[in-house]
Length: 361
Image 1 (tube, helix red, strand yellow):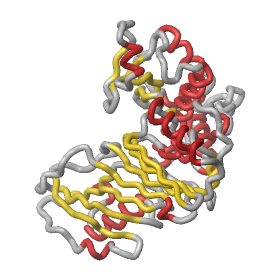
Image 2 (image 1 turned 90 degrees about the horizontal axis):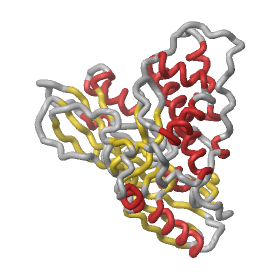
Image 3 (image 1 turned 90 degrees about the vertical axis):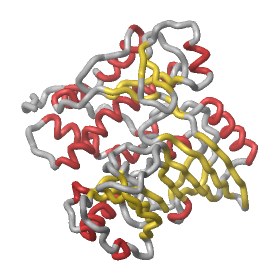
Image 4 (image 1 turned 135 degrees about the vertical axis):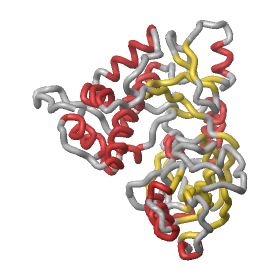
């Protein structure tokens, strides 16, 4: 991208993450989160069965205190392959107990001694062969078990809010961790877009994701303020529940009922090059937000990022709760790409035992 005149308006009119609108009235309830790694447990669920044969070894690994990238590098070292031969579906928080799938491309090669990877904080639960590499996002869902300590509000308040969330869902925001410590990925994205400075591929991907995610979050926040984040808006583009397939508003008579039943969801744009599917009022709203972030808009287009859609709401599935000695244990499942922290955000004010950057999904 060519250097831009320094007088061009910056996109740094973004606000603090906490300023994004809430869908529900705040309860004034607080709790301590992640006092210990085992207070936050995440288990990946695959959308298919592994075949038991093929060129790729898939490993189901439980870890804590180590991040996903480190595990990938260690797998490459033990298998004596390049890191690009390692696959994983997404990043998982190091300050948690997580079970995660990895794949290693070993065509015609016997398995190495995977035990070399195991430590007190890393355990291999299963290994199985499969024909294909594990790709980013190739998950069905993540199962969460979260212990909230020292909850300050009554059980009835929290239960009532959980029941409302089960019925109506939560805003499908990208979590704060998407934007880095202190939201630093956003000014870094601006700098990348505004100059010809070369950025390592991994960092470039992070900055591109942060820019388009921030635009999406602001579109969603605006629709929450307008009261239509989970309702029909003329010109909407809808996504089938549990699918990535979208369709334009056809003004059919059953749209409202399908929305109410959770069969379909309104979507927001993930900006990039391509067709603007939204029309009418929805298009006007989205473009008004996109144009507020001119550097992000032009930068994403210049980097040939593909324009996509994301559901504006998500329903936690199989949600359960248990209270004991002033604490609450929550269990629920979310589709891949949705954030457990955004469910907690609609429940109570979270006070993390330590403030750290993370990669929770």
